[in-house]
Length: 204
Image (tube, rainbow, N blue to C red; front, side, top):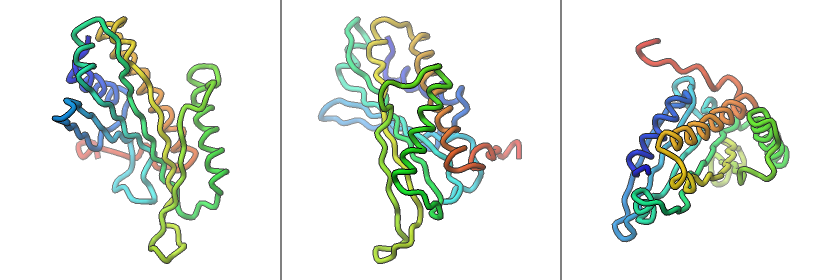
């Protein structure tokens, strides 16, 4: 069974294997509930510096580890453990598509990506989607940028009782490869040219 530390390390190994880059990890403990929260902002390759005009789609990954998960990690009991995925897609303020058109495009990209990966269409909406417009000032109707937020989750709790640590690592790796494919497809559709221009200082 995996411990919290092993799960956090497995996730980090998975995003590195998938070619994603971490841009901030926070871990916190709630003494009242003994819950630990893991949260990571994960970006694909990108050009520097990031601005409202070139930020690629990215994902925030989080999970909460409570006493029941600690118990499950040392026994054969099963308890839900949901990995939460929150996607952020920033769109140029000059984009004239309506919310309905943006929603349709986003859903189409997700469905096509899943169909390509698994040779079948998803049988339900994978992500809850929200579109927000940010304005330059309270009085202005001049849009600064448009942001699509999409959230979903995947429960890996059942794997704790039936899988070895190596198998759980592979499950997480498969999840991360889906995330990588979605981020690249969303970038191609909403912010072409924003992904793949990143180079480290050593290779620049």
